[in-house]
Length: 102
Image (cartoon, rainbow, N blue to C red; front, side, top):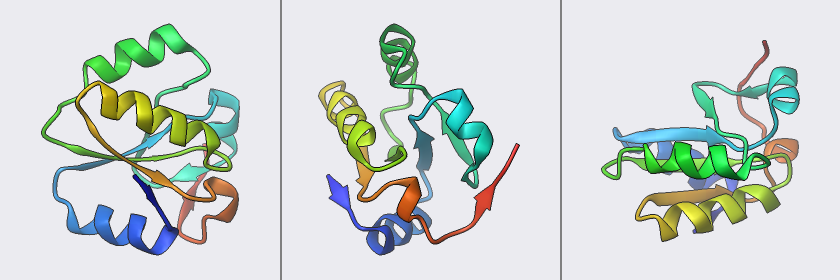
């Protein structure tokens, strides 16, 4: 499901079982990321599929990338795997919230 930033953030904050997932590359992640996010690079398909297979199906996953395209694809794969995943429309480039840097 695609959510705008307001709904994505609100739902994530209200969900005690939520996990924020960044599907960008390590290089992109190092330049800045949404606080408390975990990195699962979708550009490494085998590792991505292995990583999502180990995720807890009881949690909800709030997924983002740079612009929302890769995260939309990631959400589709995650949902097909039995996970509940929500895509951030506009991605990191339109993010107005808190940012962490490595």
